[in-house]
Picture 1: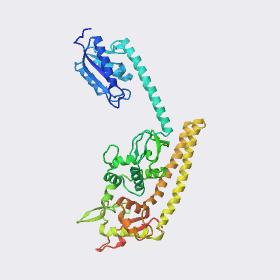
Picture 2 (picture 1 turned 90 degrees about the vertical axis):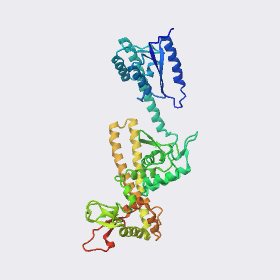
Picture 3 (picture 1 turned 180 degrees about the vertical axis):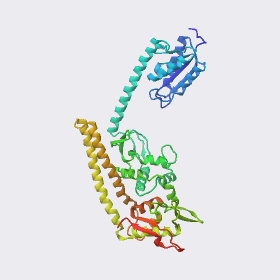
Picture 4 (picture 1 turned 90 degrees about the horizontal axis):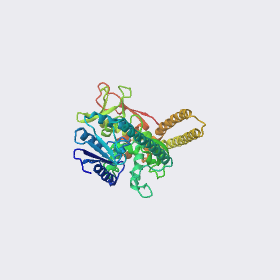
Length: 464
């Protein structure tokens, strides 16, 4: 058949999935649409190819948009495609296309290799397109149901949804632990529990060249997200809910991971690190003039560092006087023979909290079984679950307090050399040690006093 040059066809090619960019599917469509144009007597003017782009997920299709723009600009008179579902699969998309066609001052031809002509200007043609679109929409809905069921079943079986992750090596038989990275991850959780900061951990990993999977240095934000992943504790999550143990080896125990989450999610953790890192006692010294919980912050003053209450500006103390008192008090308390008792008491508390947590988690399983057996309605199960979850949240907070004793790990308690250990602590960890043991209050200077009196740093011990 002779080609009619005045009918300029745009051939639209699309394949939903082609992750390796082989383009075999779109090349077959190219040949089919070329044959269609020859049959119709159209001139194939341009090929528009959206490869590896799904039409059922609402993804952007730049080449389809370009085709419509060329039609609107008068450069294309007809669309040739393998099937109408290459262009749309949802009813709202069809209606949008109909409005586009009728808004033009000329008729646009549409044909596919599977259906033949598609007439979006006549009632019969529109009905045929709507019926096929309804079938496509139903197929998408059923596919999503199957996908959700499969994803849930996979999660309940503990199978991983990932192949590569920091701390693991991808193998044909599944992920296995990378010993070097696993050691760093374990230490990172211990540092968090010991009062360390995410920024310090990120700097340490970056200095070692242990970057994330994208090969970029860790930022505090990306590392924070990573440390919150249940995967690191060998836990399988589905839709942000932990459904059970995974089939892979954990990098840290569940207890350690959950304790770290309580620290990471503790109120007030965010937004205090920068100033604390710059000046060791920032946020540690309470203002004795305001007496309302206000704390002193480090700043430069006459060429020296001083800690000043930014609220009242009436209470300050130079760092060269305050720091020896504070560090001396902490070192002296930890050098006492009974300092090791600080660990023992908290270990007992932790065991009781863990046992209570296990009991409550068992009750959640019982509720799930009761719903499955029809003994509880979903509403009753929801109320019971909310009550238990409230108790679990209380345990998390209590366990966070009990786990603070971890900040003393590695310190030579009961020995005079502990003073060297205290001086070597990072500013963040030193703050956590202070929070555990003591409350320091800087008292305002009395009239006529020009000599520092160590008693201006009032000490209130929080432990015996």
